[in-house]
Length: 212
Image (cartoon, rainbow, N blue to C red; front, side, top):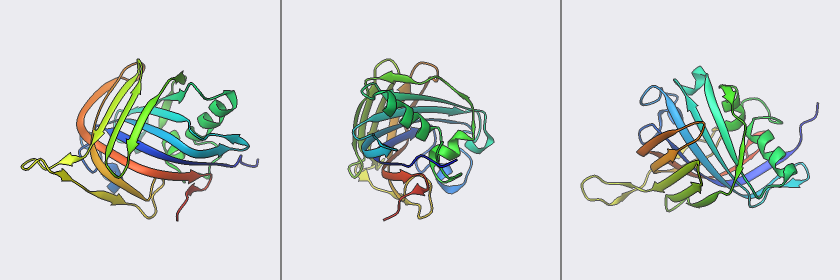
């Protein structure tokens, strides 16, 4: 069966319950033994077949009782209410890891770790992400609030800048590190404060990360 061609260029802000740096990025176990994460995406340019995805927003809320690769995770997707039926179907397919070469995108890899995928919600989503400035603000009424900011030197209060470069990664090639705080409600509820924050420009398609 031939895959439907798709591609997404977006800015993302991800916040999880791990310490700054996130052990996942280094094939290590999570800081506290489990993983709770929320990811926000603002699509600059994208398509799913002939369906344009430009300007749409998505928030994903995830939870695993142990390390991600051990499975038994839960996923809940919130899709921009502005998306029409074709756009909603396309985004849900991409974010479910469908029409993707196995193991080549974070969404395809994560899909194999979920034992429960909750019905999606379609809501207004407010997203503001400055990757280079390491700041973000995300709001989904009734479901999630996120805030991202630079890591601060604990002595001087000065902004600290660090980046992770993954030449063979399946999500990004370069990500800015920051501090994130989030509170989620609904089917997957948790709260984290001043934990791992990730800011990145991402470009993905059926075959994985599109590299410059």
